[in-house]
Length: 295
Image (tube, rainbow, N blue to C red; front, side, top):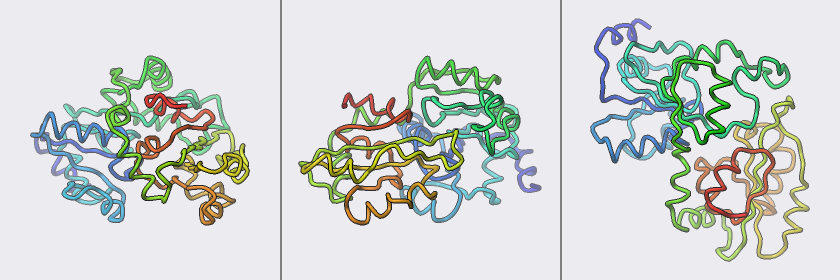
């Protein structure tokens, strides 16, 4: 803390941008899209990524500048940076200096209960400290929203001092600009024949269930019913990646080659680009996939 306090006495570095995504899990989502755009249109800016460990850092593109969460260097860059970009809240101990600008991109179009909406939903808010969440959100200066609907929800759920910018989701630019190659790379990595029709099943987390998972489909039966020339790809919600939902059948089906498990794929866009059709419930992934104009 003393090291951070020392650097907090120095002027803000107006060319320093600190990025993080999905609780410091790497260069992902909207923050990654903002970072890449900044490299093109504002090359003077120095982008530094906050990651949770060296294993995560190893997955960053070569040459990416990064700091480990909680390290001495982390304290230095967060004390000096002018700009902060994240899709979740920064840790509570990060003190926002006067003049610093926090840009919050969010992770999705909100269909579940979020923020202050959780106050009268005790089941859905299990494990969430809503007042603390709102205090952290009050550091936002700009909220990048995917749509007018999302704007209204975020402003109601987070009644804080920020301005909404109806930019769309920056991460989805690749869906409308990429050719078939990105999807072909995913198919090649997973051994999916080029002439197969790929059906992506992507259910969301149930916030009213302690486990987060409700089995709605018999995956083996669905894969068999699709028939020859089809491949079923399954992508669970990231919060279920290490839970029982994956271990109770999905892992075994993937091992046997009945389905392809894409839960660990870091780039959701590649999975979407590889899919010819999407089967989902109320996952916000449907809004991203709609950009492809596919079933």
